[in-house]
Image: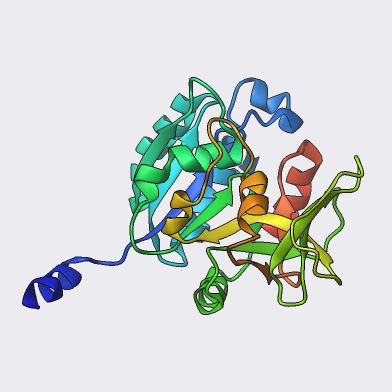
Length: 252
């Protein structure tokens, strides 16, 4: 009836994104002995600011940022810059680091809604077209879409020919988890960018501190988790000091 119509008119779609900024950033020492890794500078601009501006350029207007390591530095930086004109909420992990899965689950009350949302690591820089990835996600009917590339790394997600997640492997340890045995499987490197449906929270069974990788592996048996391949894009993990120089050449 008309009640619903009024409600849907009031319900403005605001795209949300969660930025994982809680980690200790040990690979970025000595900088991270005194700062959070999200505040690492690339051409005089912190990673956090670069990713907020990047996400805003695709229509994200609301941010959830998880905090643990030097949280006040992130809060005061954002306050100084009036939150870059966006709505910002914090998910406080000061008592204990919860890793990616636990951090996401803790932030669930801030991410609830009817729209898919974006999750991104603070130390990733990319020119991935999120508009295209969102279109792909919506048309695929997936509970989660994972940005991946063909680069070489030590850990890979394994996908079937329909680009659905089936397993994971670690080349360093030789560990392999095959959830769906659907050969041939192709190995793709995860970019640290995901688009998730809000109903994913009703499927997550893990508690406390856990990796989102474990969540995806336990869900992919019964839920579609898709690969969005963006191998032609720029992608740099600014987790190590030598990567900053590279990033500065790519992101002026």
